[in-house]
Length: 422
Image 1: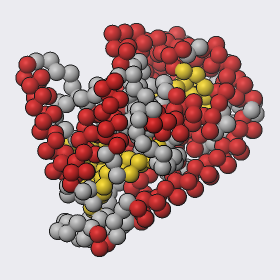
Image 2: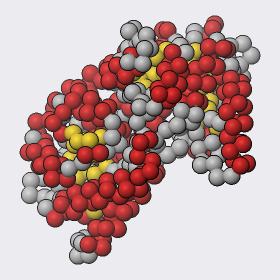
Image 3: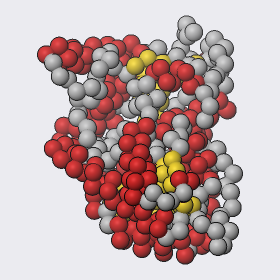
């Protein structure tokens, strides 16, 4: 996706803020944002939009809209290595309350667009992003600004304090919807009263879909997309994170070797700039151990957006992916897909698309089983596609329903916008 810019809206339009880990390199998060921006462009073309996010410089460049960093302390997400950095982190936790509240109060609505903002599966401390999310929803309550958590993901964190902070944050939101029943059930298990909260698909399902190219003709080498992730386990694996990472890379490299040895071309796919650590390691290993292999048989081209990911996938025959939004993109394109998930959300999504038998958990990844799953899926390529087409149409329709609900219940009518907005 090329950088996008938005014209300056007319004075008096609704003031809408976006919050989250945006512009930080995670293409899934940015894709959810772009889906929501498309809805606003159609329904609220006069909206005044800005961001409180983790990558403000990237966001400003990409969209031509104002953005400020999520935390007062510029090094909030760097490891504290000195007394000074520890002190700044402590001071920042106090200053962030005023920092966040000052930003929130200037809006009619603040949106958290999709993303797994209530998930605690990957390495996460409660005083990091969960605390920032709690400050956001608390500020909304204090200032009267509506905070909407839209099609967000959730799970049950094993860390008691992280779980509590997420629950408090969700409770204070004006509007909540979840991207699957698993997420809703996870929050219900914390004691949060969410019986009336709706479940809608992931926001990315409303993104424009590129033209899908026809499958490789019979007798020609098929091209397989192998989506990778820089995976180092969960909070419980911090002491052996590099061991977890190396094991995952070794298994994915072995699978790529099997693919090329059995006549398949490979495109290595990423979903975050950090994933290039894995893709580069795989390519280096293939080049070293298969020196006679034509370099065009195993390639990578790091994407800059979820649009880029889908453009790459459009020309592929089958996809094996780890990152959740890589799986989402593959399914949106109705591509035969195997999921190597790091959380139950992958399994739920795959089951919803009729592909429950083609899942594995990343922690117990079995390469021999992966080969068998891939082989079985290849033989059913002509069957699974039409079923996914039908489900994709339902997902897009349901997201349109959610946008209608937001227009009627969350976003202000012209007479309700804040006075003195600029």
